[in-house]
Image (cartoon, rainbow, N blue to C red; front, side, top):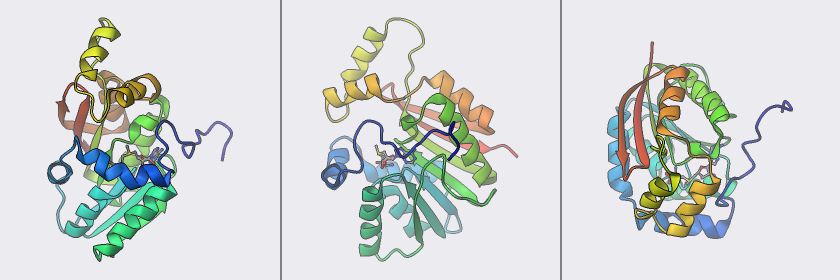
Length: 228
Ligand SMILES: C[S@@+](CC[C@H](N)C(=O)[O-])C[C@H]1O[C@@H](n2cnc3c(N)ncnc32)[C@H](O)[C@@H]1O
């Protein structure tokens, strides 16, 4: 690896290489997320069909990957955590899904043929990279998509547009998903960016933003199309 390259395999924040964390991840998420509804919404935003070739980056326990595999031609799932990948592969096996390829890699290292995928999905993972490396990641994603292909990006992105951070983040903590302390740690330590930066990064990478839905002032669902 070149000396200037960011090492994305160093975990930031929650340790997704911990078996204990991964085994309770789905239960923890289900307390404040309707995963089934999210999967349907993501598939619609990505315009998935039975013919689609799909890539999920930061696939975690594979809830969306498995949903996509049951409905699409083939799916590639990548994550930097071996523990997450093993868990997701075991679940896929139980469900008899044989059209998923798992790869231990991330935004900056996933292998692809340019223009191969119809859709790329990433949920709650891009905030692990700084804005500089987000821009590199989004360019790689754009390159991996066919013209007109879609990216659905779901992440914690802030709408802090001036004013006091205390007021804005204080309000967000009232919606705290899971636990207030965990969300406060996310705000303080993880690399979630501002919406005006994220939209600029997406457009600079070669995407047209088709829609940007924001839930509770921090959870953005961007549906984007690769410009031809
Ligand atoms: C909060 S979990 C999200 C999992 C799943 N996508 C979801 O929506 O529930 C974040 C995942 O991103 C992975 N991750 C962290 N940095 C990454 C990177 N640079 N490239 C790919 N995945 C990464 C973690 O290992 C973890 O599985």
